[in-house]
Length: 317
View (cartoon, rainbow, N blue to C red):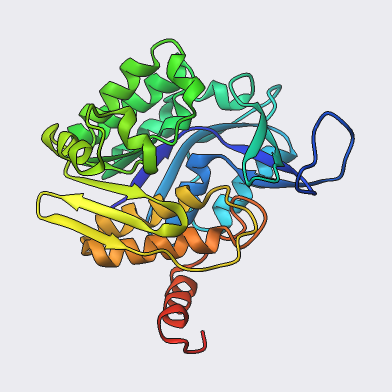
């Protein structure tokens, strides 16, 4: 199987226990949970049996070791995760609003996550990589942008492929060098995975199909638009494939898009038809929201296939 590599932030997530709870007053919290979009992506890919490794940095603390042990246990390659003494692992504190939105308090750039670099271990990991996945959340500093550029160039030089999930907050677009970084990544992208309106951040067209035509015209091989509970749509030069989502009780949406992307990329690398890749990806995204914690709903391929069978036929899992 082809090996995929991702680079970026590792952190723990600590959540408000009650919906509508504010951080402006004391209240009950739950966590810590292993987190960070690249870590979620790599963990889900590994659980599906895809060879997957992560370039990252954590502190020499409980939060860092919690993440490393989760990734190790789930089969990910952790050889390029550097542990820094004297630096704290990144954190995200999360509250859930009554309208379904979330509010975050982050410490990422100033944490060990900001110390990510391409060292000997990362170069060794990239030397065996067939695919590099870029998360927009990971382009939060000139240093992390350079890591992404190096990873892209190393994999492309070996004839490999690149996928890009913008997953970017609007306020990040005004960071120094961000728009240039996004343009560079998009110019090297083979598989583009925006969520809903993110597509229009990169296109002039005001309609979905027009924006997709722009992306394909730039040399991108395929565009997959994530639509949450409504499923996803795949576009390539052969046409359009629509795949509905699965109905589940949502507990926590954090990480669902990362799990979807990991599943789709994994099956795309295996040469699966769009229908198959979309179905598995939608199932992984659905399962991800059924448990509190960004990685707690990540499932193995056997569990995902059993979920799909149950959903489609009503047969016992």
